[in-house]
Image 1 (cartoon, rainbow, N blue to C red):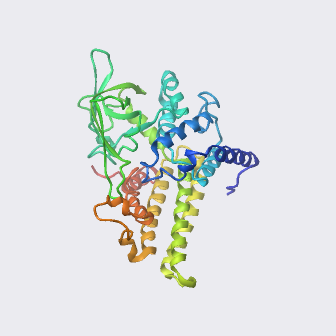
Image 2 (cartoon, rainbow, N blue to C red):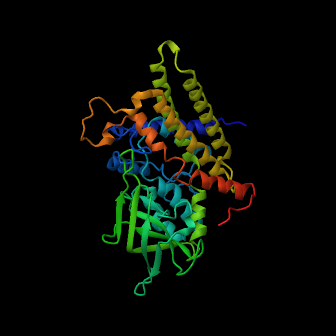
Image 3 (tube, rainbow, N blue to C red):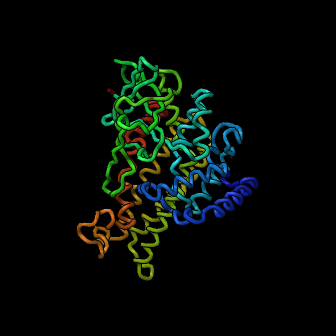
Length: 402
Protein backbone atom coordinates (compact mmCIF):
# COMPACT_ATOMS: atom_id res chain seq x y z
CA UNK A 1 0.00 0.00 0.00
CA UNK A 2 1.39 3.43 -0.98
CA UNK A 3 1.52 5.85 1.96
CA UNK A 4 3.43 8.60 0.10
CA UNK A 5 2.10 12.11 -0.53
CA UNK A 6 1.55 13.72 -3.94
CA UNK A 7 2.95 16.94 -5.39
CA UNK A 8 -0.11 18.92 -4.29
CA UNK A 9 0.37 17.70 -0.73
CA UNK A 10 4.03 18.66 -0.73
CA UNK A 11 3.14 22.15 -2.00
CA UNK A 12 0.70 22.44 0.89
CA UNK A 13 3.41 21.23 3.26
CA UNK A 14 5.66 24.07 2.16
CA UNK A 15 2.85 26.61 2.48
CA UNK A 16 1.81 25.31 5.91
CA UNK A 17 5.38 25.34 7.21
CA UNK A 18 5.90 28.87 5.92
CA UNK A 19 2.70 30.14 7.54
CA UNK A 20 3.46 28.47 10.86
CA UNK A 21 7.06 29.67 11.08
CA UNK A 22 5.94 33.18 10.14
CA UNK A 23 3.28 33.26 12.87
CA UNK A 24 4.93 31.33 15.69
CA UNK A 25 6.70 34.44 16.91
CA UNK A 26 6.54 36.63 20.01
CA UNK A 27 4.28 35.13 22.70
CA UNK A 28 3.44 32.20 20.44
CA UNK A 29 7.11 31.25 20.23
CA UNK A 30 7.19 31.23 24.02
CA UNK A 31 4.21 28.84 24.00
CA UNK A 32 5.85 26.20 21.80
CA UNK A 33 5.20 22.75 23.23
CA UNK A 34 2.72 23.99 25.83
CA UNK A 35 -0.70 22.49 26.41
CA UNK A 36 -0.31 18.84 25.50
CA UNK A 37 -2.10 15.93 27.23
CA UNK A 38 -1.66 16.30 30.96
CA UNK A 39 -0.60 19.93 30.55
CA UNK A 40 -3.82 21.62 29.48
CA UNK A 41 -3.32 24.24 32.21
CA UNK A 42 -0.27 25.72 30.49
CA UNK A 43 -0.48 29.08 28.72
CA UNK A 44 -4.25 29.05 28.31
CA UNK A 45 -4.68 32.73 27.41
CA UNK A 46 -1.85 32.63 24.87
CA UNK A 47 -3.28 29.46 23.36
CA UNK A 48 -6.73 31.08 23.11
CA UNK A 49 -5.15 33.97 21.23
CA UNK A 50 -3.33 31.44 19.00
CA UNK A 51 -6.68 29.81 18.24
CA UNK A 52 -7.93 33.14 16.88
CA UNK A 53 -4.71 33.47 14.86
CA UNK A 54 -5.41 30.08 13.27
CA UNK A 55 -8.95 31.23 12.52
CA UNK A 56 -7.72 34.35 10.73
CA UNK A 57 -5.48 32.12 8.62
CA UNK A 58 -8.40 29.86 7.67
CA UNK A 59 -6.76 26.81 9.26
CA UNK A 60 -9.74 25.80 11.42
CA UNK A 61 -12.37 23.51 9.90
CA UNK A 62 -10.20 21.92 7.19
CA UNK A 63 -12.10 18.64 7.37
CA UNK A 64 -15.64 20.04 7.45
CA UNK A 65 -17.88 18.65 4.74
CA UNK A 66 -18.52 22.14 3.38
CA UNK A 67 -17.07 24.15 0.47
CA UNK A 68 -13.97 26.21 1.28
CA UNK A 69 -14.79 29.65 2.63
CA UNK A 70 -18.33 28.82 3.76
CA UNK A 71 -17.43 30.05 7.23
CA UNK A 72 -13.97 31.42 6.45
CA UNK A 73 -12.28 28.01 6.55
CA UNK A 74 -10.22 26.34 3.84
CA UNK A 75 -11.24 22.80 2.93
CA UNK A 76 -8.36 20.32 2.63
CA UNK A 77 -8.28 16.74 1.40
CA UNK A 78 -7.62 13.97 3.91
CA UNK A 79 -3.96 13.81 2.93
CA UNK A 80 -3.82 17.61 3.12
CA UNK A 81 -5.17 17.49 6.67
CA UNK A 82 -2.47 14.96 7.55
CA UNK A 83 0.22 17.19 6.05
CA UNK A 84 -0.98 20.21 8.06
CA UNK A 85 -1.17 18.13 11.23
CA UNK A 86 2.34 16.78 10.74
CA UNK A 87 3.84 20.22 10.20
CA UNK A 88 1.91 21.61 13.17
CA UNK A 89 3.19 18.89 15.47
CA UNK A 90 6.74 18.91 14.08
CA UNK A 91 7.09 22.64 14.91
CA UNK A 92 5.65 22.00 18.40
CA UNK A 93 2.95 24.62 17.88
CA UNK A 94 0.83 25.32 20.99
CA UNK A 95 -1.67 22.67 22.04
CA UNK A 96 -5.10 23.38 20.57
CA UNK A 97 -7.89 24.57 22.85
CA UNK A 98 -10.52 24.46 20.09
CA UNK A 99 -10.28 20.76 19.25
CA UNK A 100 -13.64 19.78 20.73
CA UNK A 101 -15.58 22.44 18.88
CA UNK A 102 -13.77 22.00 15.57
CA UNK A 103 -13.51 18.22 15.40
CA UNK A 104 -16.50 17.02 17.42
CA UNK A 105 -19.33 19.53 17.56
CA UNK A 106 -18.91 21.14 14.12
CA UNK A 107 -19.08 17.87 12.09
CA UNK A 108 -22.05 16.85 14.24
CA UNK A 109 -23.90 20.09 13.42
CA UNK A 110 -23.09 19.59 9.74
CA UNK A 111 -24.50 16.06 9.86
CA UNK A 112 -27.47 16.48 12.22
CA UNK A 113 -28.06 20.18 12.90
CA UNK A 114 -30.26 22.72 11.18
CA UNK A 115 -28.95 25.41 8.84
CA UNK A 116 -29.76 27.99 11.51
CA UNK A 117 -27.61 26.11 14.02
CA UNK A 118 -24.72 25.85 11.58
CA UNK A 119 -24.92 29.56 10.80
CA UNK A 120 -25.07 30.39 14.50
CA UNK A 121 -22.25 28.23 15.86
CA UNK A 122 -19.79 27.35 13.08
CA UNK A 123 -18.49 30.90 12.43
CA UNK A 124 -17.42 31.32 16.08
CA UNK A 125 -15.59 27.98 15.96
CA UNK A 126 -13.96 28.79 12.61
CA UNK A 127 -12.73 32.13 13.97
CA UNK A 128 -11.34 30.45 17.09
CA UNK A 129 -13.53 32.66 19.27
CA UNK A 130 -15.88 30.16 20.93
CA UNK A 131 -14.57 27.13 22.80
CA UNK A 132 -16.58 23.99 23.59
CA UNK A 133 -16.53 21.09 26.03
CA UNK A 134 -18.35 17.75 26.01
CA UNK A 135 -20.97 16.87 28.63
CA UNK A 136 -21.34 13.10 28.31
CA UNK A 137 -19.91 11.07 31.23
CA UNK A 138 -21.50 11.11 34.66
CA UNK A 139 -20.65 9.47 37.98
CA UNK A 140 -21.86 5.92 37.45
CA UNK A 141 -22.45 6.48 33.72
CA UNK A 142 -19.10 6.90 32.04
CA UNK A 143 -18.36 3.97 29.78
CA UNK A 144 -22.04 2.97 30.07
CA UNK A 145 -23.25 6.23 28.59
CA UNK A 146 -26.86 5.05 28.22
CA UNK A 147 -27.20 5.14 32.01
CA UNK A 148 -27.07 8.94 32.30
CA UNK A 149 -29.39 10.66 34.77
CA UNK A 150 -28.93 14.36 33.94
CA UNK A 151 -32.43 15.59 33.12
CA UNK A 152 -33.86 18.48 31.13
CA UNK A 153 -37.43 19.75 31.29
CA UNK A 154 -39.13 22.39 29.18
CA UNK A 155 -39.85 25.70 30.84
CA UNK A 156 -43.52 26.53 30.30
CA UNK A 157 -42.68 30.25 30.13
CA UNK A 158 -40.19 30.26 27.24
CA UNK A 159 -40.25 26.69 25.91
CA UNK A 160 -36.53 26.17 26.54
CA UNK A 161 -35.02 23.18 28.28
CA UNK A 162 -33.70 23.59 31.83
CA UNK A 163 -30.87 21.16 32.57
CA UNK A 164 -30.17 19.72 36.01
CA UNK A 165 -27.53 17.12 36.83
CA UNK A 166 -23.82 16.40 36.99
CA UNK A 167 -21.18 15.61 34.38
CA UNK A 168 -17.65 14.40 35.10
CA UNK A 169 -14.26 14.10 33.36
CA UNK A 170 -15.20 17.16 31.30
CA UNK A 171 -12.02 18.29 29.56
CA UNK A 172 -11.44 22.07 29.28
CA UNK A 173 -14.74 22.93 31.00
CA UNK A 174 -12.96 25.62 33.02
CA UNK A 175 -12.16 27.53 29.80
CA UNK A 176 -15.11 26.60 27.56
CA UNK A 177 -17.81 29.03 26.45
CA UNK A 178 -20.30 26.27 25.55
CA UNK A 179 -21.01 22.63 26.38
CA UNK A 180 -22.95 20.05 24.37
CA UNK A 181 -24.86 17.98 26.89
CA UNK A 182 -26.56 14.62 26.56
CA UNK A 183 -29.59 14.77 28.86
CA UNK A 184 -32.78 12.80 29.52
CA UNK A 185 -35.74 14.84 28.24
CA UNK A 186 -38.42 12.15 28.51
CA UNK A 187 -39.34 11.44 32.16
CA UNK A 188 -39.29 7.74 32.99
CA UNK A 189 -37.31 6.80 29.88
CA UNK A 190 -34.57 4.20 30.15
CA UNK A 191 -31.19 3.52 28.57
CA UNK A 192 -30.75 5.16 25.15
CA UNK A 193 -34.41 6.17 24.79
CA UNK A 194 -35.68 9.67 25.60
CA UNK A 195 -32.32 11.47 25.38
CA UNK A 196 -31.62 14.79 23.66
CA UNK A 197 -28.42 16.47 22.52
CA UNK A 198 -28.51 19.99 23.99
CA UNK A 199 -26.29 23.07 23.63
CA UNK A 200 -25.69 24.91 26.89
CA UNK A 201 -23.82 28.16 27.51
CA UNK A 202 -21.31 27.81 30.36
CA UNK A 203 -21.54 31.43 31.54
CA UNK A 204 -24.67 31.03 33.68
CA UNK A 205 -23.70 32.06 37.24
CA UNK A 206 -25.53 30.03 39.85
CA UNK A 207 -26.73 27.56 37.23
CA UNK A 208 -23.43 26.10 35.94
CA UNK A 209 -20.58 25.30 38.32
CA UNK A 210 -17.19 23.86 37.30
CA UNK A 211 -15.01 22.07 39.85
CA UNK A 212 -11.51 20.98 38.73
CA UNK A 213 -10.51 17.37 39.47
CA UNK A 214 -6.98 17.28 40.84
CA UNK A 215 -5.07 14.29 39.48
CA UNK A 216 -2.08 12.47 40.92
CA UNK A 217 0.13 14.25 38.37
CA UNK A 218 -0.94 17.54 39.99
CA UNK A 219 -2.84 18.90 36.98
CA UNK A 220 -6.57 19.54 36.64
CA UNK A 221 -7.62 19.55 32.99
CA UNK A 222 -10.59 17.32 33.87
CA UNK A 223 -13.57 18.76 35.71
CA UNK A 224 -16.88 18.05 37.33
CA UNK A 225 -19.70 20.22 35.96
CA UNK A 226 -22.93 20.79 37.90
CA UNK A 227 -26.07 22.07 36.16
CA UNK A 228 -28.84 23.56 38.30
CA UNK A 229 -31.63 24.63 35.98
CA UNK A 230 -29.18 25.77 33.29
CA UNK A 231 -30.83 27.05 30.10
CA UNK A 232 -30.22 24.98 26.96
CA UNK A 233 -30.26 27.24 23.91
CA UNK A 234 -30.77 24.56 21.29
CA UNK A 235 -31.38 20.84 20.77
CA UNK A 236 -29.50 19.23 17.85
CA UNK A 237 -31.61 16.74 15.92
CA UNK A 238 -35.06 15.67 17.00
CA UNK A 239 -36.05 15.78 20.66
CA UNK A 240 -35.55 12.31 22.12
CA UNK A 241 -33.14 11.29 19.35
CA UNK A 242 -30.03 12.38 21.23
CA UNK A 243 -28.54 8.89 21.32
CA UNK A 244 -28.28 8.83 17.52
CA UNK A 245 -26.59 12.23 17.50
CA UNK A 246 -24.26 11.31 20.38
CA UNK A 247 -23.15 8.07 18.72
CA UNK A 248 -22.63 9.89 15.44
CA UNK A 249 -20.34 12.32 17.24
CA UNK A 250 -18.30 9.53 18.85
CA UNK A 251 -17.69 8.03 15.42
CA UNK A 252 -16.01 11.33 14.45
CA UNK A 253 -13.78 11.46 17.51
CA UNK A 254 -10.72 9.68 16.12
CA UNK A 255 -9.31 10.60 12.72
CA UNK A 256 -6.49 12.87 11.61
CA UNK A 257 -5.98 13.83 15.26
CA UNK A 258 -4.69 10.29 15.87
CA UNK A 259 -1.78 11.00 13.54
CA UNK A 260 -1.02 14.29 15.29
CA UNK A 261 -1.01 12.44 18.58
CA UNK A 262 1.51 9.95 17.21
CA UNK A 263 3.96 12.72 16.35
CA UNK A 264 3.87 13.76 19.99
CA UNK A 265 4.37 10.12 20.96
CA UNK A 266 7.44 9.96 18.71
CA UNK A 267 8.97 12.96 20.47
CA UNK A 268 8.34 11.35 23.87
CA UNK A 269 9.88 8.07 22.71
CA UNK A 270 12.93 9.95 21.42
CA UNK A 271 13.44 11.50 24.87
CA UNK A 272 13.21 8.09 26.54
CA UNK A 273 15.70 6.62 24.06
CA UNK A 274 18.01 9.56 24.73
CA UNK A 275 17.84 8.89 28.48
CA UNK A 276 18.67 5.22 27.85
CA UNK A 277 21.66 6.08 25.67
CA UNK A 278 22.95 8.64 28.19
CA UNK A 279 22.77 6.07 31.00
CA UNK A 280 24.43 3.28 28.96
CA UNK A 281 28.25 3.66 28.95
CA UNK A 282 29.69 2.70 25.55
CA UNK A 283 26.45 1.02 24.50
CA UNK A 284 26.46 -1.47 27.37
CA UNK A 285 22.88 -0.76 28.40
CA UNK A 286 20.35 -3.23 29.72
CA UNK A 287 19.45 -5.50 26.75
CA UNK A 288 15.90 -6.04 28.04
CA UNK A 289 15.26 -2.28 28.09
CA UNK A 290 16.83 -1.99 24.64
CA UNK A 291 14.48 -4.66 23.28
CA UNK A 292 11.48 -2.86 24.83
CA UNK A 293 12.54 0.42 23.22
CA UNK A 294 12.86 -1.23 19.80
CA UNK A 295 9.40 -2.76 20.24
CA UNK A 296 7.92 0.64 21.13
CA UNK A 297 9.45 2.13 17.97
CA UNK A 298 8.11 -0.69 15.78
CA UNK A 299 4.64 -0.50 17.29
CA UNK A 300 4.51 3.27 16.75
CA UNK A 301 5.35 2.83 13.06
CA UNK A 302 2.62 0.17 12.79
CA UNK A 303 0.08 2.51 14.41
CA UNK A 304 0.91 5.20 11.88
CA UNK A 305 0.43 2.86 8.93
CA UNK A 306 -2.83 1.57 10.39
CA UNK A 307 -4.10 5.13 10.93
CA UNK A 308 -3.26 6.08 7.34
CA UNK A 309 -4.86 2.88 6.04
CA UNK A 310 -8.15 3.49 7.84
CA UNK A 311 -8.29 7.28 7.49
CA UNK A 312 -10.33 7.27 4.31
CA UNK A 313 -12.68 4.46 5.34
CA UNK A 314 -16.22 5.15 6.51
CA UNK A 315 -18.81 3.04 8.23
CA UNK A 316 -16.27 0.71 9.88
CA UNK A 317 -17.50 0.44 13.48
CA UNK A 318 -14.30 -1.25 14.63
CA UNK A 319 -11.68 1.18 13.29
CA UNK A 320 -11.95 3.80 16.09
CA UNK A 321 -11.94 1.10 18.77
CA UNK A 322 -8.89 -0.63 17.31
CA UNK A 323 -7.06 2.71 17.15
CA UNK A 324 -7.92 3.53 20.77
CA UNK A 325 -6.76 0.11 21.98
CA UNK A 326 -3.48 0.48 20.10
CA UNK A 327 -2.47 3.94 21.25
CA UNK A 328 -3.83 3.68 24.79
CA UNK A 329 -1.80 0.58 25.61
CA UNK A 330 1.26 1.85 23.73
CA UNK A 331 1.36 5.15 25.60
CA UNK A 332 0.90 3.53 29.00
CA UNK A 333 3.77 1.13 28.27
CA UNK A 334 5.93 4.10 27.26
CA UNK A 335 5.27 5.72 30.64
CA UNK A 336 6.34 2.52 32.37
CA UNK A 337 9.42 2.31 30.17
CA UNK A 338 10.36 5.92 30.90
CA UNK A 339 10.68 5.27 34.64
CA UNK A 340 12.31 1.87 34.06
CA UNK A 341 15.07 3.57 32.07
CA UNK A 342 15.58 6.03 34.92
CA UNK A 343 15.83 3.25 37.46
CA UNK A 344 15.56 3.93 41.17
CA UNK A 345 16.02 7.66 40.56
CA UNK A 346 12.52 7.78 39.08
CA UNK A 347 11.13 7.29 42.58
CA UNK A 348 12.65 10.53 43.89
CA UNK A 349 12.09 14.19 43.10
CA UNK A 350 14.87 16.68 42.28
CA UNK A 351 17.43 17.41 44.97
CA UNK A 352 16.38 21.06 45.28
CA UNK A 353 12.71 20.28 45.89
CA UNK A 354 11.70 21.66 49.29
CA UNK A 355 9.17 19.93 51.55
CA UNK A 356 5.95 21.92 51.61
CA UNK A 357 6.23 22.89 47.94
CA UNK A 358 3.26 21.60 45.88
CA UNK A 359 4.32 18.08 45.07
CA UNK A 360 3.62 18.34 41.34
CA UNK A 361 6.40 20.94 41.06
CA UNK A 362 8.83 18.21 42.09
CA UNK A 363 7.91 15.88 39.21
CA UNK A 364 10.16 15.60 36.17
CA UNK A 365 9.03 14.75 32.62
CA UNK A 366 9.40 10.99 33.00
CA UNK A 367 7.41 10.96 36.24
CA UNK A 368 4.63 13.09 34.73
CA UNK A 369 4.54 10.80 31.69
CA UNK A 370 4.22 7.72 33.88
CA UNK A 371 1.47 9.16 36.08
CA UNK A 372 -0.61 10.65 33.27
CA UNK A 373 -0.46 7.56 31.04
CA UNK A 374 -2.01 5.38 33.73
CA UNK A 375 -5.32 6.84 32.53
CA UNK A 376 -4.79 6.22 28.80
CA UNK A 377 -6.57 2.86 28.79
CA UNK A 378 -9.55 4.32 30.70
CA UNK A 379 -10.50 7.77 29.39
CA UNK A 380 -12.10 8.18 25.98
CA UNK A 381 -13.68 4.74 26.36
CA UNK A 382 -11.98 2.07 28.46
CA UNK A 383 -10.20 -0.91 26.88
CA UNK A 384 -13.03 -3.17 28.05
CA UNK A 385 -15.63 -1.06 26.24
CA UNK A 386 -13.53 -0.95 23.04
CA UNK A 387 -13.16 -4.75 23.08
CA UNK A 388 -16.90 -5.15 23.56
CA UNK A 389 -17.55 -2.91 20.54
CA UNK A 390 -15.19 -4.95 18.38
CA UNK A 391 -16.64 -8.25 19.62
CA UNK A 392 -20.29 -7.30 19.17
CA UNK A 393 -20.35 -4.92 16.20
CA UNK A 394 -17.48 -6.33 14.11
CA UNK A 395 -17.16 -10.01 15.00
CA UNK A 396 -20.86 -10.53 15.69
CA UNK A 397 -20.33 -12.23 19.03
CA UNK A 398 -23.21 -12.44 21.54
CA UNK A 399 -23.74 -9.36 23.65
CA UNK A 400 -22.79 -9.34 27.30
CA UNK A 401 -25.68 -10.33 29.58
CA UNK A 402 -27.05 -7.31 31.43
